[in-house]
Amino acid sequence: MSKTDETETPAAQPRAGMSPGKYLALYRYLEHRFADSTVLTFAQIEDLVGFALPQLARTHQGWWAVGGANVETPPHAAAWLLAGRTATANLQAKTVVFARA
Image (cartoon, rainbow, N blue to C red; front, side):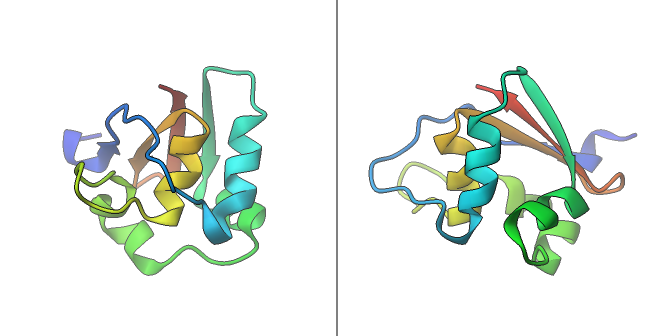
């Protein structure tokens, strides 16, 4: 596996006003995991949230990255940030490791 296969979000602090929106079920799932890291497949994430992940989530590592300080946090990233996690995506394996920040 090459380094370009993975993207890890920085251990950012949740910003005021962040909302997981339609990714609320992912937030709730991660919030209630006691393990320091949780690995989910894309299919498992889709089962949790009840809809298919966007194509960008499968093909563009930037979808899993958290924006800069002046960028509004998208709902999907807010789901893991509010749960105190980082996300490391492996696009080839179609998995994401959510690690405690």
